[in-house]
Image 1 (cartoon, one colour):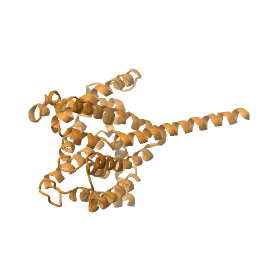
Image 2: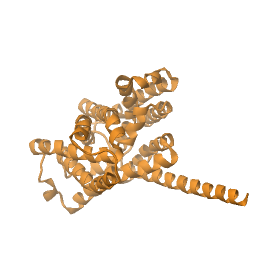
Image 3: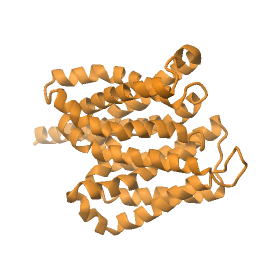
Length: 325
């Protein structure tokens, strides 16, 4: 009897330790994923959108490589031409997303953009309905219907009520609005398309392949439209910021998020990501003196409420969109 009680106590201690590890990983991920838009906004002073993304993904590819090798040595799916072909199609919208999100930061602040990207949950769910028949039952749930409506209205409001700094107009310039929507939509499309390759290869292998292909696709684009020699002129500080952003926001956060979903579950780990906009907005206000208008505050609240409701339906592709960041 004493042995049974001792076993139960040991199991409870292990469970408590695992939960603590899961929550620590989840909140570390929230902290890290509050930073990408701030890093990109800062790097816009030194890097053009093409070069910034090429070098960020190249660094991320190098950083994830040891983990990919470690996973391969442990067994599992091989990385061959078929695996690369599986990941190639999702990389196209990923490249468009990476370029347009940096361009969007010329029109809106990093805090506003982080809030706006929560709409990707809505777009991902809508795309999942088209791509995956098994998820079409989701559309009949009232949480999804109401969440989608609130999310789209809130997303439009957050960006539309962004003042145009160049002309002192009360609304964002139309190109900025289109670029921001394109960035978020392409991120959602990437999340849906990467679902099956990620399920087949695993998170680390798929991200390793995606980072390599994305870097390869960005290289000729940088040669054609950007400045490939930017690191030479950007200075040590800017280059160091780029390396830190790539290693933390791409590689480290990716690993931590998988620790979180393993220990505390996908639903809770994903819901905690709604804290990212608040953290990003606070940091942006402190560092870049960014401020939201009253209309943007209300729109942000509507958007986050809509995203929260949509996540309660837990469609598979919506979940994997967050997992494959």
